[in-house]
Image 1: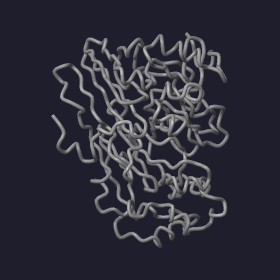
Image 2 (image 1 turned 120 degrees about the vertical axis):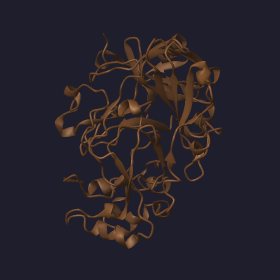
Image 3 (image 1 turned 180 degrees about the vertical axis):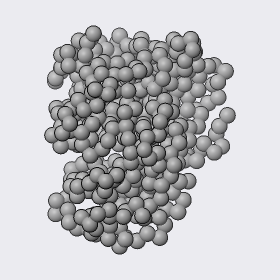
Image 4 (image 1 turned 135 degrees about the horizontal axis):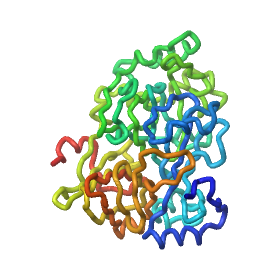
Length: 421
């Protein structure tokens, strides 16, 4: 059986390989698992990665607590390996990064609108899986990220039930700041960085997390994610700033606060506070303006399947990404048409997607190839993709996310309150 490391890596001209893969599959690209470690976090062990491979990058690099999907975005890790964070397209005995494939074929993969505007696939998603909470942090806005030559990062969360059989140590997330919090109070937390717990969570509020729900989070909003395994469609950037200095007794270095800020501002407390979207952080209606529950695209239960929006709504007036969850009953088959390209991961069951087999693995070795991840081109999505559940007993469940402005028909925030069956 082929493994990722046994494949021949294609660099540069890869058109013939990609064209052959698209023709054989019906407009789809098979992707290999894309593992990312974080040196400052504690893996939650729900990614289906074999336990003996959790530290496959080396103990010094930290444990693997993320799997990235459809990524053309490098991971912003120190001492990273070549292509870390980049997804590989697999065809036969060869592989090529999705980044190179998109650069070579552009609109033929991601569609004309996205290619003409961004010149790349500008989004990605991941499973983010930790044993406990992570520091209260934010992702920079476009304005602030551009100061260091990066893109800003809005993001979203969905907690797939299939990856959350246990909640681990702290299934609660702190969001924003309590209404009435002052900038002086946040500045005082920064000044207390080396004096023990800086107390930033005293200024925030935690929300209990529930599998099968989610959140939409704009840039500049503080959040300390809890310990549910999270599916995270987001912008193609890895910028962040950690505002909490101590988590479960583990130090968070100052360097992780200022890593994506201009060097001249690394000790400028007022500038660091200014990178927060203040009004969004102290919003008294925070949950109402950010909370998500799935809402059906249509009532297709009699046909044996249900497609549901799991990420929808706008951030600062803009649709940066959307996502859907498709569930097919045992033996069901359907044709799903979408407005644009997407990246898909299987979370349960087995079946087929056009001419590709789908199979949700129970355990994955570090270099193992799987049949659970696919990138769908815009043309295939618009033509319609045939999904089939080949199991006689188990549902087939897949998650797929889309690029910016692809789904103008997506519901607005709060739609789950009235659009159910």
